[in-house]
Length: 195
Image (cartoon, rainbow, N blue to C red; front, side, top):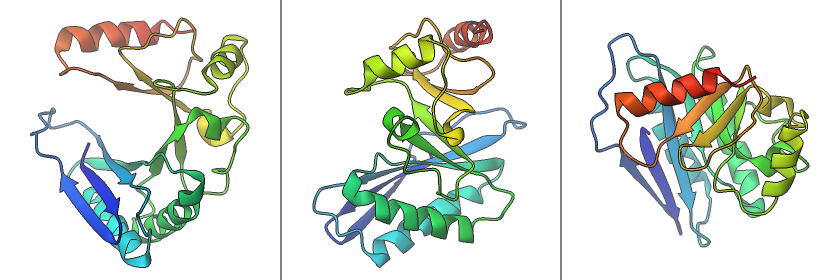
């Protein structure tokens, strides 16, 4: 997590990561920026430009190989999000991939993301509310997400377990507690056993 951007009325509040991140020197990093917009956010040009600028800056940090935007955009916020991603793609070096987190519904029947200038959409398979049963049933039956952008990765949480998930995906694991080596190794073993 590199930063959180809060959009409130006409303000753009950028809060950088405060905790130090200790990783091996050879680690390749993905810069994740969370966007939160309240119901009164204007979603104006200034907010778009400041948000894009903050994300682009994190993409230039040492060892960062990709950026990921985490924004649970509502229906009324999608146009702003689309324009943000278009501008982000224009400003980032072509070698830096753009990933977004995606509500599972965006990957199923509500495929509004297919025309976005992104390299990956990560279906978030935790804390789902409506539609959880349909997603579970679809994946358990061996079917995949409809959107091709969602077929290369998965986002899961350590506090919600899945018995069956598609193999051969990049897996983003979100942990509700501080990471330790024992937890990390156990989860890596489990993910490698998926078939």
